[in-house]
Image (cartoon, rainbow, N blue to C red; front, side, top):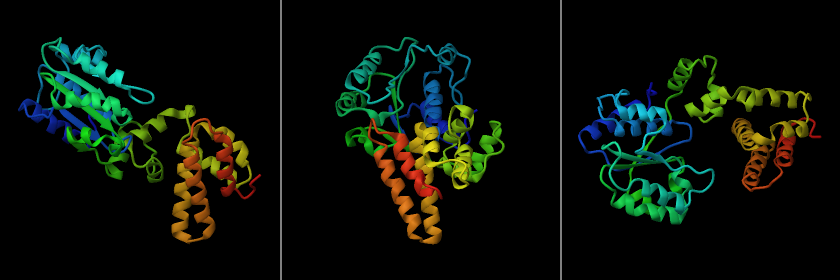
Length: 296
């Protein structure tokens, strides 16, 4: 079931597809965790469907069945763990050449369009300007400003907003997550899928509840900054983000210089953690020491 905050946009795209007025290059942008990939997947399936209804894809035609099976010949994605290079983009463009194998449309999805190198972006421009027949490109990004202006100017842009707090709570409740609090939502930036992923990680990751317990143990001298940092080093970026938010909110309330320094320490640590090869445990130890009553 398409989430309520995404459904209106999917219906809008579907209506335009049926009227043959859907733009061939769509850029879906917004905060990570708002459901851009969910929307893009549903839209791609609809574009490829041979019996599109008012609600989107039919789910029963050959195209829909192949899509669900993960082997649709006219559906392509460009995914990279790091930067998306020119060879990958050229390969994706090549797959769009010629007639669709199922005789309908072709779709290319670029989930992290902002990771394209400049050369890759330039290689995509010609296709954005002069797409092959019945071809649609769906670009997704959480950092729209990282895209080249030439890419932005050739796409129809749609921002995916964060849904209201109660909307997220109700949606998570429908997924079986009935004990979500406003504090948990705030910790994950109110991004529904980020919250859901965190809650589903369980013991495999650090949840906000686990973070809160760890900080309570730190303040109660049950944990030292060093021991906690070692446990949390793989989640250092997220932990520092949470600590910075806590320190900033406390400073707004108290205007105390110690709280300002704690927030500044987090900001500096966040910048340090962006460098590859850094010792995350050491950096995190230094930050946690600021929040501890017993630094060592």
